[in-house]
Image (tube, rainbow, N blue to C red; front, side, top):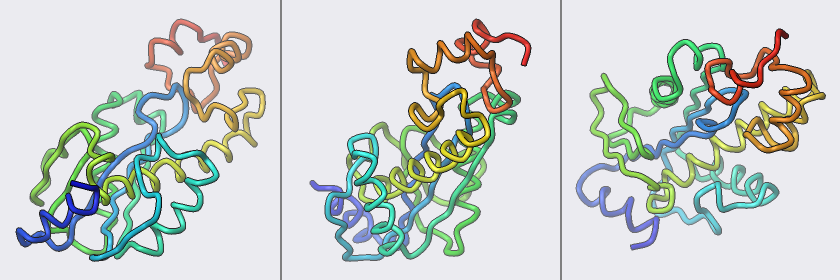
Length: 203
């Protein structure tokens, strides 16, 4: 079953407005977690659509435009580092996903969510791991979330150029860890994350 047949399977069961939901930014040491909810038009095909982690950066930008053109509706949820520290990353991810769903102008019949479930929501939802490789709607959401977050991190690079957020987007690369050692964490670092805690100096 390809990623389009997967969603069609649920449409044939009467779930016509399917929102795929995915996030970008659970793992990084800095910046927000971003979730996207995408309702694709029926009988749509986006050439090359797949899990954003498997797509080179330039191609992601192309797919981002293609998804926006092919979507009935898109919702975005963004939870910043301070709230991540206050809630924990799992709760922050769920809140970002809930915000993304609530920002849709169309109420979905079904939510297909990567890896987690959203508490306190009345819409039917199904969740399993790596569904961005199984569902077209979730793959589309993964592209929107990833490109949206990358653009946010590029803006942060202009504010904090000494951390080179344009290169690693806040992930725990050896370069990023060394820069935290040198400069200490900045305001967009997640102070509750162990790898930041062990390196942090007064900012």
